[in-house]
Every structure is written in C-alpha cells, then in structure tokens.
Picture 1 (tube, rainbow, N blue to C red):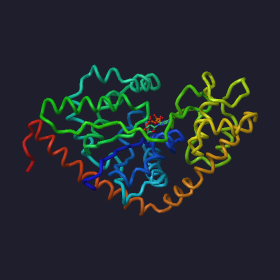
Picture 2 (cartoon, rainbow, N blue to C red):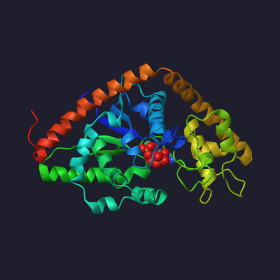
Picture 3 (cartoon, rainbow, N blue to C red):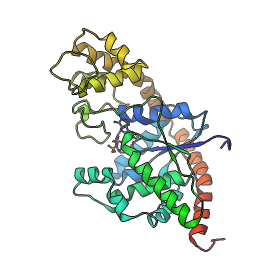
Picture 4 (tube, protein in one colour):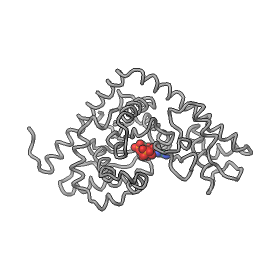
Length: 334
Ligand code: AQP
C-alpha cells in the first residue's frame, strides 16, 4: 500500500452466474482504471450474498466465476487487493462491534431491506436487516477514503458514515468517515423488458438482463426484444424509458455523448438501433468473456491470487479490529 494514495473499496455480490451489464457499467467496469491512482481493495461479497437463499453448490461455483470475472474486467491482483469477503474474518468481527452501535430505527428505514423483503417474503432474515452494518464493516475495517456506489447504494453509505461518526464520538476519533466516489462514466442501467426497473443479476426475467458472460447471439436476441415505445423517434425524452436506457448504454459503451448517438440514428428505425446497440455491447464484452474462460481454466492461478489477496486484506483489517477491540474495552488477547 502506498501511504500517499487514498484507499478505495468496492465489493460485488456473486448472486448469479455472471455480473450484468448494469454491474459492469455502474461499477466493476470502472474499477480497473482506478488502480494506478488509488490503493484499491476489491472483493467478492459472498457474506452478503447469503442474505437471500442460495444453493451452496451454485454459490461456490458462482463465487469462483465472479472472482475470475472481476480479474477479466481489468483488476490486476498485483496492483489491487482482490479477495473473497469470507476469507477475511475481520469483516464479521467488526460487524458485531458496529451492530452494537447501530440503532434498530435507522436500519428500519433502509429501502433495500423493504424492497428485498417484499421480493423474498418467505425469508426475511436478520442478515437481510443488518446487511448495511456488514457493509459499514467492509468499508471501515480498511479505513477506506472512497467508496464507489451506484444511486441504489447511497443510503447504505450514509449509514456507514453515521455509524463511523457515532463510534468516533463515543470512543474518540478512530474511523475515517468514508466519502462516496462517483465515477466519471457510470449510469443506472435498467431492465430491457421493464425499463422502469433496474437491471439486476437475480432478476427472474432473463431477457431483461444482459450478462457479461452472455454470448453474442444471446446479447443480440435480448436487445432485439428490448421494450421501447409506440413513438418512432430515437431521442432521449421523458416517458421514453426504453429508448433512454438504450441510448445510455450505447453512449457509455461507445464513449459518445447521447446527443452524438441521437444524431447518428436520426431518421432510423428502432429495429436498426436495437441491433446496433446489441452489436457494440457484444463486441465490448467478447474479450472479457474470453479472458474469463482462460482464467477459469487455470484454477491454480486463481487460488494463488485469492489466497494472497486474503492475506493482504487481513493484514490491513486486523490492525483496525485489534484497535477497535481495545477502544470498546476488551482485554488484550496477548
Ligand atoms: N442496473 C445497474 N446499473 C448500474 N449499476 C448497478 N449496480 C447494480 N446494478 C446496477 C452496481 O453494481 C455494484 C455491485 O452490486 P452488488 O452485486 O453488490 O449488489 P446489487 O446492487 O444488489 O446488484 P444486483 O445486480 O441488483 O444484484 P442482486 O440482484 O443480487 O441484488 C453496486 O455498486 C451497484 O450500485
């Protein structure tokens, strides 16, 4: 770790067979570019993933695949700490300290808890409720300066800031209060079949969701089916959620502005536009899919990377936990 550089932290859940185009554009696709400017800690949030039911065999498979995909998206395990959350016990240890400094009332206000409990009414477990405390522990255990978050995660980051400030007030200055990092390029990507809903890994409707590991034909087929509107103009405007989403995707992937994209497709039909978006997305994701396949064929290399990643993560985090234990009044273990 370079002491002169700020520390940036981000985790992603292995809650499906692949990240989505939304995850790629909103988070993991931007991580690689930050590796020279910051000390980066990137991980697979397997502890978070079990807040909803997971098949253990699938979870293990998806987690390893997610780790390989994180590297394929441009994370260099020599430059960044790249690890599995469950391999660093410090997250769970700090989680408990922070849980005892978080109020029931503030957790009750979290919209993700409300959304996910509505989605999984048969499994409203305590972990789902305390998820934001674990997220606070993920961040504070590394004393992260910056946390890249999508709009959907802003409320959780605010809670992490409040918990850090409260702890500092009670026990004396200790935690760094993290700031949100808003990437220069990033956007909220919506479902292709219901563009009023965010594209999500665990969406039951597979057609709404482009997976980074989808092959070209599948990507093109899904874009061809994307919901648009009865109008015929390719223009970013209120009430045109489907077209707005496609224009956003096209402009982020091609690094063109929305206005340039509108001009390029002026007078053209929706069919032609949807095909063009599908083509650029498929071309962008193809090398990532190839690199993922190469990495998945080299399990020994992956193991070396995540074992070393866990060791680096623990060496930073253990110092924080030891000091936090002392702060709250536990007797030193040694
Ligand atoms: N549709 C999206 N557009 C832009 N950014 C997105 N992110 C997620 N969906 C979109 C960003 O991806 C990061 C990692 O997310 P996560 O896996 O930790 O959890 P999530 O936000 O709950 O992602 P999903 O895909 O919706 O997963 P499931 O279906 O398991 O809940 C975050 O930074 C998020 O902002």
